Image (cartoon, rainbow, N blue to C red; front, side, top):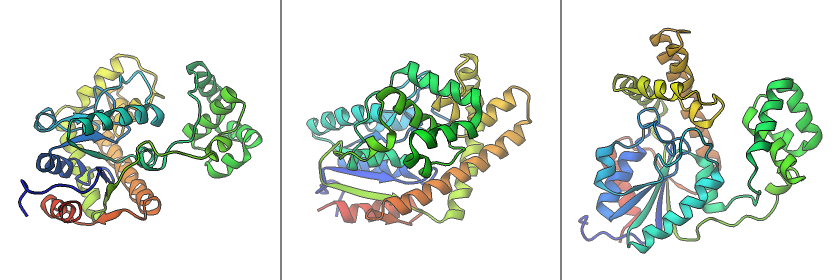
Length: 313
């Protein structure tokens, strides 16, 4: 089957997988052959100024086919799944109206879940309420904070580790802003962001191969300027608790730039965190997306061939 005669029988293509699994390369090849537009579905690649550290597609790659929702959020802001979802819905419709194939690609499982399963109808939380919750965490510490959440929302507390700062703060800010618990909002019916017939793929290459790719890619990031990206954000004096400041490798490289550890030590620690993150992604996708097409191939051409055999007629 030639690329020119191939047409997809799906409304959109979804490509998920752990970091360094080759998602972006596969999406680029598919977009070129399908007249597609790539839509970012990764919570870190939404931030501007982190092209290298988040392994965002290069400018040359972005020029080959349309790429949307990359680098559109300033690092001084926090992008929630709700914010991304609003943009994703609008972008999806624009791409369809242009007669192109939407190709969602990324490593953030929550974004994919919101896309196809929907979000809990939690109202937008005012920033001052969120700031108060973060301040309280620092004032009373993790254990006392977790105990408070157990009193307010015991159902959520059972599902969240006492050290999971982000999720515990989310519990408190939702309760303070709405007067209702996070578990209450999560129990309400959800509506998918987009209704459609989706081709769903998860890239799950051999773990040893994946971990080696993580390490090699991080070395390359540092060689071509990741430290400069980190230095620019440090110079802005941004809150270290912002999501962008927790990008993989960011805390370690910041520590190196502050003189707290050598470059080699920072790189090695960052690689370790990247491997752990890839493992968590691998496990999450395996357990949560059980109906998706799972692809274990490690070569781009084989991956693309397998995907084409499923999506095209």
